Length: 145
Image 1 (cartoon, rainbow, N blue to C red):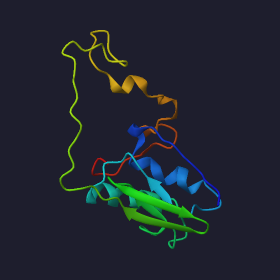
Image 2 (cartoon, one colour):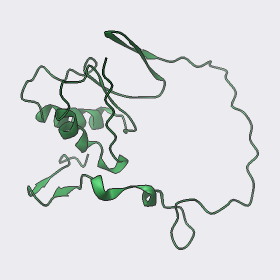
Image 3 (cartoon, rainbow, N blue to C red):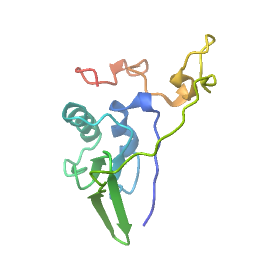
Image 4 (cartoon, helix red, strand yellow):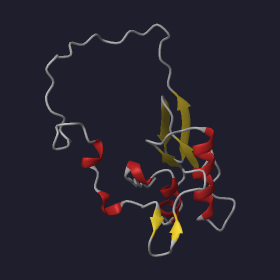
């Protein structure tokens, strides 16, 4: 079994999944889209985009060839078989108490004012922009996803 891992920056999702997936040959047995805001409308839009990049309408089939990861998704991978399962957590599990210091350090990625800036850590050289200047087309659905 061959493993293929394709990582995209968070800011490029959900629209950007279709094209890179279409470039993988042979087709993956299971594509798992992770770190994605999973909701009915976002998954429907992303699936529409993915399917637009495949001429053969029989691939990918949601649930068989492509899944959107949610909390507690467990994949059991064995020779020739990939099983999708959901992990179980006890109803009465207790989180570990922690001591959080009152005087916190400056965030690793921050602005000049020492405010948190999570985008500062992203490599934007591979970003799929909202508007493609080369093809003069939008990379996002009309609903904003």
